[in-house]
Image (tube, rainbow over the protein chains, first blue to last red):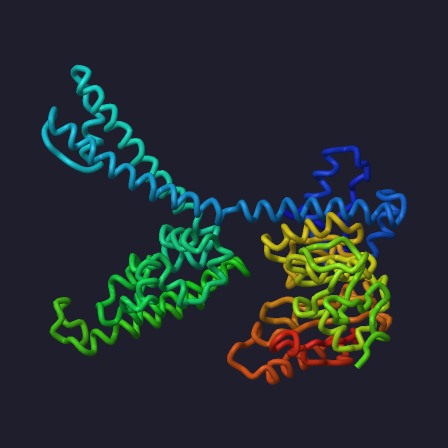
Length: 300
Length: 215
């Protein structure tokens, strides 16, 4: 994206532009240069701009600079906000809706289809029906409805694929740790990467368990050990008495991963190694205590 | 103490709710109280404001050219632009930049940049050299490093000033703030001569105000 600035002589953002502000393409080019350009060192840009004829005088230069920076900042901020984490939040919510509606509608289909075809249930059954050639108007309606179910289920699959492709660029660390779909769910529950990055680990741990949390706060229930992160192998695959520790450790690293993604945006291998190590320690507790586990006593 | 002598031109003390408080003259930004053309500069929301309120020798006279690192939504930088000359405002997070752009639209001398203060090469093609002041308020680890990397924008004749607010908790939440500040100042002295430091705790917990000049 960097348009090949030479290392020797730093070039200002305006160099190569003629300063004709009636020109739309010129304006776009200026915005681009502010956003993507670079220089090894600053220089007396106002004087250089006047010398090169880009601006009439210093006042004119600052007016142009302001116009270009305001436009560039607005554009870049909007792009980054539109970017990516918002898209992912919408995608995961849509995927869940599509899934839920497909299942509900599949139930309706099987109830109706049972009066006309062999019995069956679920989205797969609807897919089977959708492929049939209907005989008569009754079957036609059922087969058509089954077709909608199949389409919705396909849409949910496509959304999942989209999430799997996009999540690693939006939140590389969070995705590596949680997997793309759980990463997107956490973003969705928090309301975006920005908000997730600002949440303490304790909140991340119980995201998605708000009902249980509020029941607890009203004194009616024990504190929830985990919210949506339960779906991850690190928590679910840990024996029940250690799940609290696992959830806490996992949430702690997820919070750090979200912060790294939001504030730095680059991969942090150390984070992932730390989590791996911590999980091994927690899991080792099980091996230490139950030699006669159904797993066959992994230790010694 | 009365620090009025240390206030730059364009910054004044005005009476709001019966108390003398800092104010600058310019379009309002977030619904702050006004007194005629003057609008309240809330030092509880602004580290640079707190440095002025506490009478630190910022060397500001008004009309300076400024690079402001960590501009956030532009609350403080709007006051800076009210009394300073060309003001470059760098902020890395997109959400606050949306507000910052709104602030810049009302001010001719404010240039918003969605850039990372740790990577000055990404804005050195826009920000001019030989600036009078670098204001730094970035809540990231490596605050001394940020100041060192941005030293290149300051004038080299001994009159350039770094006005920084160091946040202890951004460096290390476990260490005592004193220890963190000592380390930061040590590192800062690789490129700057530290002229004055004052704890801003009355207004901002665990922050150190620093005035320095390039060596």
